Length: 250
Length: 250
DNA sequence: TTGTCTTATGTGCAAAACGCATCTAACTAA
DNA sequence: TTAGTTAGATGCGTTTTGCACATAAGACAA
Image 1 (tube, protein in one colour):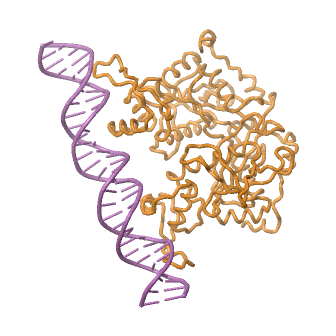
Image 2 (image 1 turned 120 degrees about the vertical axis):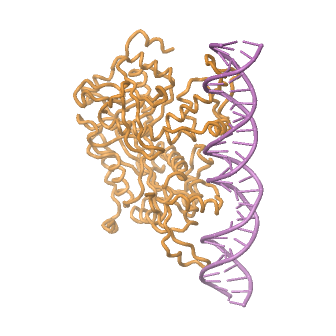
Image 3 (image 1 turned 60 degrees about the vertical axis):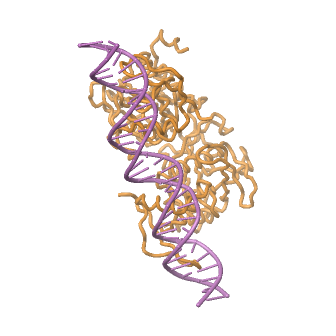
């Protein structure tokens, strides 16, 4: 099967490209952002309705091309700023999508990013960019099994997604679920001060499960990431909960 | 701080690019492969010595440009085939590196891939591509802390790495360590039939620690991924171990 | 003032997972 | 037959986890 190679040594067929890569046609390079937050205890992503030709009427992730003098992270920050009007949120690279016919107009390779928006940032984005819609993301698989996701309008209608953006959203949920309980990403969805119940709500919303309260509480407190602020939640008609801050481990 | 945006709605500055993206200069797009296997119980990556201008004399990961009609995975498989002469090994996308001055010649964005080579595939690559060198990878941090890695020649000399390939190697080790005990990637470094000891050796080499034998054995057997073949290891001067096959969970 | 409602927070305990020492099995070589 | 070596199993104390339940702290209404 691979014996055809035994006879001849490996030839560096790329050496021409190494010397004159401009001789080859290049794919266009873009970034697409999953702007993810929580609405009423469920994951929600900010989407734009496409008005123009390819996939007109379908819903797309905010994105943009990568400038020749722009790093990938800078391009993602630029989209965050220009298309959602926000800064200062958690942003991480997700995966790079390079299928040939992702975009029917031309070959575009897209580096997907995941931005995590606390409730305030999500509201701010909706205010600053009125064309954005917070679509509920249904994840019909459990754990890290993977699979499709469905985007729903605030009224509950299924939103058809443009390009391969359903795949990108699925990858975002998969990665977030995978990282949630061994990393500190969960805190990126919370305001600076939060209660243990809010932290548990974040985990339950992302994982799509319910969690045992005393066990969750113990596990989180034992991690050493939570610093009590001394003050308490206000405005409840019952016992107010302690407010904590996220303290990155020393 | 972000109030400057309150006055004006978000403008789609990308719409020109959406219509005529060829008007913008594009970064070149490449793939770089971490070909990782184990040599004498330690991680090893296949590197090429650069003979030409940028970083001449330094050691680089095999890579190549992404063709306009090539998916990213296809480009990675092509490199695997042309530069290492192998096929049929585990290959997964790692991360995309896009720093502005990664390559001094021009702007090149590179999608890094991780290929996991069982011992036979590693030997085959070394035979088919004699310019490849199996460099030992030292990982001087524990767990998933992250940090630098060092490449060593077979004689133990430090090999200076080209471009940002040290970062790519570090990312490869980080990801592999992270995935090792919740996924089935470990089996990608083993032949079809293997003993529990060999499986443990793989885990120990990747993690850079020793593991408790009975606990490891129990954990692996309880996962349901191991199917006993009924036959036993040959050629030992002591009790031969049972050979297992990897059986993806039903 | 007191009792009720509701959620926060703490406790006790059984089940499961894990680390570790140790025991037995199976094979070679002398 | 015996020594040497590693595979594989077992027992047990410790740690982690799941879960039921008890107690604490606030608002509110009678």
